[in-house]
Image 1 (cartoon, rainbow, N blue to C red):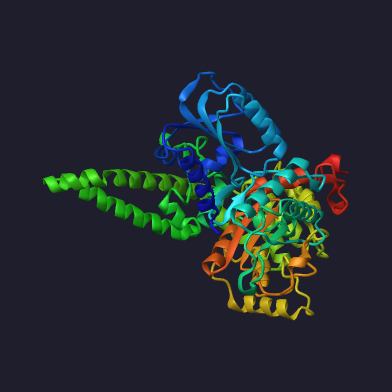
Image 2: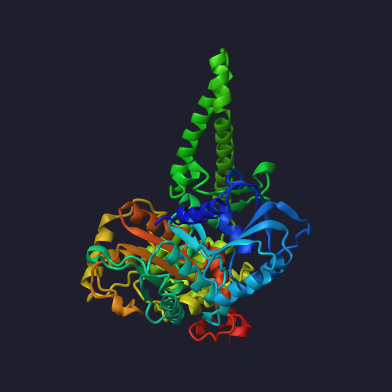
Length: 574
């Protein structure tokens, strides 16, 4: 279950089926991102693809009859119209058309009617309709999927298409479970079930071998765990996303001072960068020592290259030079990124801020934490964004505490010129009235299993104060793989497939409202332990994008659960 390998196989198939000869690749905005995250431009050149064009942007009318054209687009109405226009007046010798998802028969018929010159050689569906971020992580690049706490229609349609494509590319026909009580999860589950039933011929994969449990698709709601995206992360990939933002495997450093010109935009792809692939889940401390080892190795090779004395030395130098050059680029790139992370960590006092964030997330010590928060958020060295996050975490944890003082903290934020609307919006979006599950270990004595787990966790102590929090997803996945009963919290929509309690061997988890890199790390650890889990989300969040989504999702809703914070709310929500 490797998503990047799946997308690569599809791209290889496209390039080989069109035969030898020079080719152009015709894409749309989304498929451009899908391909660029799996293959570099030099990889495509090796497959005789020399030109890339966008179907949906201004193109020249020059006829290039010596080129074959591979078309890889999403089957949207706009794309069908643009392709029809292209086929009525073809510029290339032959067209090999691949759609990234299921396409209606009527559209195929319409395109056939437009192809009067009979230049189309192939029309196929290849289910590569999602962005593969890591081998076990995909995104649909939907920064906002709700308004008024209900689905945005376009985001819902895109989510159905994206998840369907993941299931088809992995050849899974799963049991579909959703988080009970979440209308958005229930609606998505129903539409995916309708799609798999309607296209039952496509989903006719191998029946369960040796009585193994069928695969599982689990649809979760981000609002059950608003804490994970708010915390500062310390693993390499998550930290880069939190402080510098990763977009389609690219980090834009053009606004950062003192960054060399060639590193104004850096590509961070585990598949194309061996160092990053090996260290994306390493924590900040480990990365420092690993980059030091890489530096030492680089210096040793650089010294070897100075000793060119014989013909054999010259031959070795010429053969190893491209690899040496590549290594030089890797060292410089990661030193540049780590330098930026280090500078921001010091400037924003993140060690102290993060330690308090973790304490709030993991321990119920109200009065001591309240005093520390007051002190930190009044400190000018702490950025206003970090101050707002601390208050939000406090408000989520102590929402129903007798001495909760969120209003007093919001007053300090207001005096510093911060956006006070964020805190009430996040309580409405993911407060106690919305959440299910045991987010803050508010354990009732009746639940013996959870109480024991909580006590053991307390006795073990903490290895690292900056990483003591574990996402709620970890507990959910542990329950699934231990074969615990998922009803009634996660009912199945196609229950005829659920005759036994054995844990599934393959699991796809999709988080409505966005996944995080910390959750991807949890999935990575489970996969290393022998499980097969894929994680996806409407987007991949850092704290700022999560806050933006919560503000967007609560637009148009009347705030009923934040009466004590009315003067800090947006007037539109009153």
